[in-house]
Image (tube, rainbow, N blue to C red; front, top):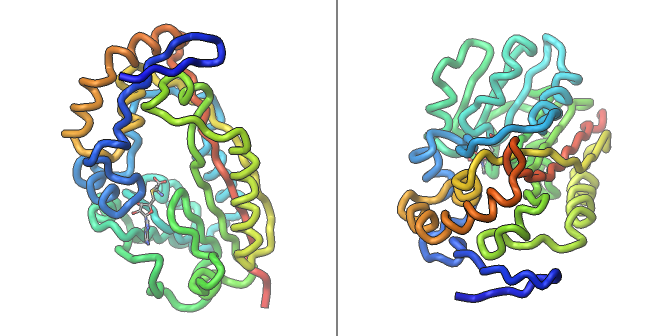
Length: 280
Ligand SMILES: C[S@@+](CC[C@H](N)C(=O)[O-])C[C@H]1O[C@@H](n2cnc3c(N)ncnc32)[C@H](O)[C@@H]1O
């Protein structure tokens, strides 16, 4: 067991680090998504929490809606199980969601209608759409089609069409210093680094920049278990059992010392990019 001496001379035990366990599956890897589609039933956050308004998803859906009219065709790249994609049914002519994970697309297709389609497509390969197919292409935490060297996004987005991306850039708000070992500190330059990264991504995308914002969303985790569920999102049950045994008692002590009646406050960082395909 190791101990760290914090600045305020409080001695804090380093908690068990599940990322060092051999069964840890790197988040966002193909194996991780495959496990989530089977054990988690879709790309759904499984922890209990409440949010301060506005939520990041609402900011993003409002932004997409501001570019919509009834004749537009929309593509959601990396749609997961399609819950967010379905927000736009009835607000556009056609909505298509694509994802490379078969299990997500099977869940998404439950209750799909004539104006919404979900297809198994690998966004890293040639896309099964004709030129100038879409007025709006967005990705919520999925592949961004406008990287240098990838012409597919530009090929299928109409000239003058809009590309939007929302990316979760990590969480903190004290979470990382409260649970050392289980969570790891972010560098002081973190927010500046994220801004620079997405500025670069947008400027390299051959899109005309409309907007880039880095914003914070405030969430309150309901219980000590939720601190562990968040950390172990997408991991196997066997590893979760180990983490619970190793950490739950100490996480509970820390949680109840710092939580408000709403729960334990966490800040989620997000990047929102909006660009326009330059007209021919
Ligand atoms: C972080 S999840 C987000 C899911 C959904 N957009 C949401 O916000 O709930 C990223 C999604 O991108 C998908 N994805 C990753 N690489 C992909 C690729 N090459 N082609 C298509 N989908 C991909 C994953 O399968 C996953 O569903």
